[in-house]
Length: 413
Image (cartoon, rainbow, N blue to C red; front, side, top):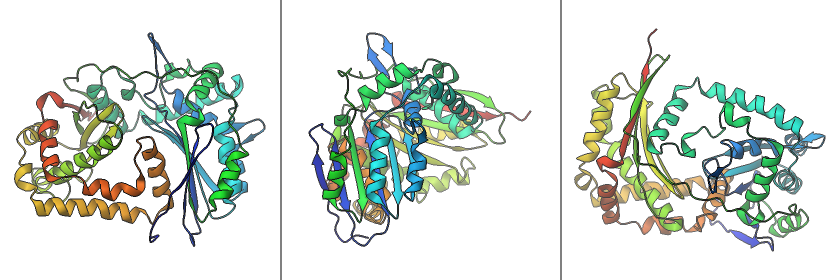
C-alpha cells in the first residue's frame, strides 16, 4: 500500500475536473471518466421524460466511432477497457501496464466525441434487448426490480437500467445526441487517473483533447416519489423461493452528510444482521436463510434505501422475522462502545486496504467528487461518527411505514 496518498486536482476552464493520484513504483495505471448522469435521470419537467435506458444506451454507443470501435484502440495500446451505468452515474474506464498517456487520449476521445447514426442505433437496440431478456431469467435480478417497484412505485429506479423492449424503440440518434450534449457537459464530469503517472503530462493531454461544443443546458428535475408500496409476490420457475425486505429512508441529506449517513446505516445493518451477528445465526438455525443472505445499503442524492434478501424456503416467515426484529431491535444493548469502536476500526481498515488497488481508489474518488467529499479525508469522516448518532439513526429508520417486501415464489411445475 502506498504510504501516503497524494491527490492532485485541476479544474479546467470548461469545468472538467482532472484528478490524479501518483503511485510511484506501481506498474498498473487505472483511469475512470465519470458523469453525474444515470438511469434515474429521465425527468425533463412539464410532463416530459427521457426513455428508460437512455443513459445505458449512450454508454454502449459512445464506443462506436466512424470506422472503428474504441475498445480496439485500447487493445492496441495494451489496455483493458469497460464501462458501466448505475442509478445516478455513468463511468468509462481502462487499466493498463503500459502507454498510460496514449490510453488516456483514447478515453477522452471515447467520452468527448459521440457518433450516433440510424444504423448503429438500430443494431444496438437488438443487442441491448437481448441483454434485457437474459436478465429476465435471473431470479436475483427480477427480485431486485420487484422490491424497488415497492420501495419507489412508478419511479425510474424500479425500471431496468437497460430499459425495456418498449422504451428501446423510443431511443433514436436525435434524443441520444441531445441527451449526451446535456448530460456529458465537462462541468458535469470528472476524470481520475491513478498510477505511476506525471500530472503535468495528464493535464497536457486533457488540454489537447477538448469536448465538442454543447447546446444550452436543460435541467434534469428531481423525481417525485409516491408512497411506499404494500409489498407483493409472484411465482417464477426457480428451484427455491427468494425474498427481499425493503426499507426506504426519505432524507434531505446531501453531500458529506449523506456519505456519512451511508456509513452509519452500514454500521447498523452489520451489527444487527451481519454474518458475525447473533441474529444471523438465529435466522440460520431457523432455516430462514442460507449463505445467499445479504443486505445492501444505497445512499444516493434523492434515494436512500436498504434491501435485505436471499434464498429461503420460508419466505413469509423470513419477512415476519425481519419486520418484527427491526421494529423491536436491541441495537442499544448489542452495540456497546467497544463493539462500536471495533466496527469503526473495521471500516477504516477496509478503506486503508483498498488503497492497494488503483481501481478502488479511482472509482471512489470519482464518485465522491460529486458529493464534495475528499476521499483522503474518509478516516476523519469515520472518526466523526458517534455511537449516539448510530443509535438515533436506528430509531429513525426502523419504522413500519418505511418497510415493504417482495417474495418470488418457486414454481415447482
